[in-house]
Image (cartoon, rainbow, N blue to C red; front, side, top):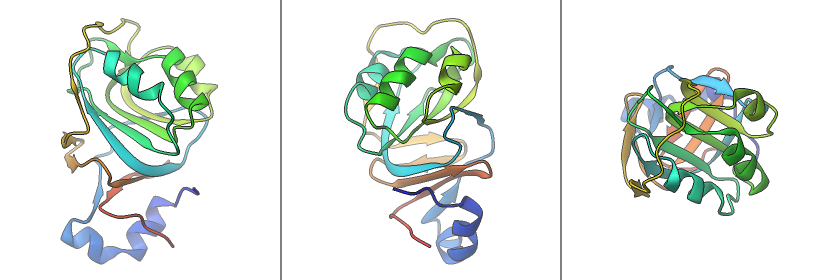
Length: 166
């Protein structure tokens, strides 16, 4: 599945932007990973300073999906690390968006996958297994539902209620 240029999507679908079916995430994320542009159906996860469920998700077959994680915006520890991103790449995930921190940046930047996160932090997350899968989440000023579509590139991140084409 080819990634679409977010600027072209916004220019092509202004009515979807106006009515809220196509939403732009606030520009708060740093770009990591070799894949600068990615897209796919959204899977959601809500966790806080705990990465067990995130790791479990990314060990599954991704089939071109994008995992969007509400990490509560915490900057106190990293909930995504290099080994997990390698697993996600090998399992066919298109991208990962984390409202939280990552670690092992050099390893993540060698992976052919798109990763967006607030920043990096060397401290590991806890391993309690707490969180919720496939629930509505709210990150970067935007409500995101499982099954919606994500389009990301160097210009920004879009979420659409439906798959779009140009």
